[in-house]
Length: 190
Image (cartoon, rainbow, N blue to C red; front, side):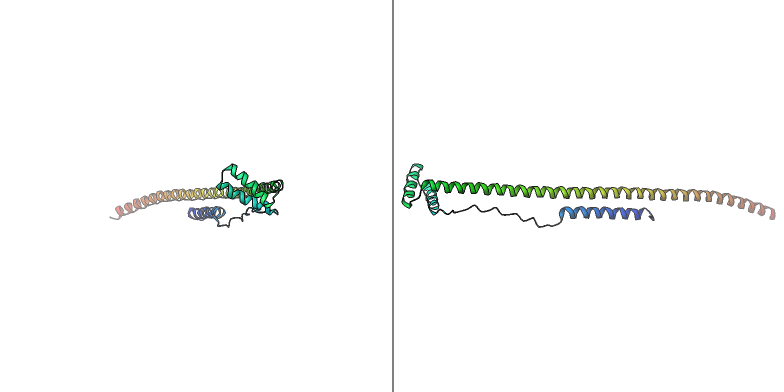
């Protein structure tokens, strides 16, 4: 399967690099942020122009006059434009209710967006954790394969050393026998 520890090491290194790229693509991929709904603009005017006139007069007087004079001036302005104060109060109550309703609607939108983002985060987290688990399992398998190949190579080295030692011993014994025979023949011929 593997030809040596270097091939297994390269395979393991390539796998680790692929894992890093995968994780990076999950977290650092440039994405456009989801569109955020703009809050609904509260109603500026109603169908009651007299309430609008009194509101404008109140805002102007409130900044310039003491509270007692504001009350007198506001009653005089209402009388001058012919505004019914109970009708104006009802209109202002409707405006306040509309503002409160728009706040509730926007709070619900924010809550919905938060829930959606939470679900997206949970889904992404589960996917990433599953991918990490798969990659960790694959890395563990590759490490076992590398250990087996390393062990096999070490066994082959040990076997080669043993065979070399045996060959050297036989060769030296044979060389000693041949040298003894040569020396014996050399003494007889001289």
